[in-house]
Length: 131
Length: 179
Image (cartoon, rainbow over all chains, first blue to last red; front, side):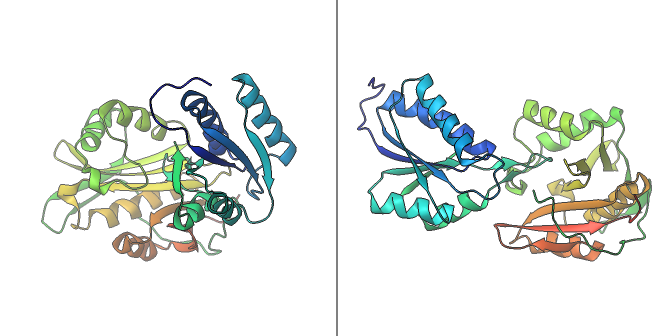
């Protein structure tokens, strides 16, 4: 795995529920993980607001990983998406949680989704919001 | 954005329609009127000079090119815009932008030199009248929950809180019941 900077790789947990901003977060995190040599785990969440099924999200994740030959674990976190993601991050000593950073309203206002809100307010692990 | 948002059943109003002329609380003569394409440069100037501390949820954007791109979207087909003008300057702007469900999202901005002078109230009421005259039925907005003056203004005009569980309050109003 190639390294672009002399910083230690991180153990990163990406949460993806299928919303547009989470798909964008996936692409950017996979690219960054490749560059930095991060140890990436992708957690597929049950997001009731998403139009994508679990299978569709999984296929999207696999395709994105395959594109850049990134080797990441994919797992399904069942139950409440925000709390399951935060629990997994803390119990398994991840260095960072990455999630989509919000969508834009018709007006162009940034709106934080309920999962991002929960994770931001509850996580003891560093959170990155991808915009 | 919540397509199942509960709108009030009864119509709010009546509201004034543009143009509306009045003196603000500091006796400055203000005209609230419909936006016309000739007003673009004055509107861009207001936003380029806008205090970043008064931004809400990332708008207005910062920098002239970003402001222009954003306004391009707001001033397009299917939107309704009114401005508050003093002399040759645009000092306030309120807009309705159509969402995917045929309702309209509202935003209102008053330049920092003209805040607290009663301009926002007339600007907002006149936008409601303008929207209603143009067939707009349902309007919604989000506002940061700590922004009590704004929430009170929206309530005074007829907005009701429809969702209070996240960082921002969501509020909605009904202008018409037909269609």
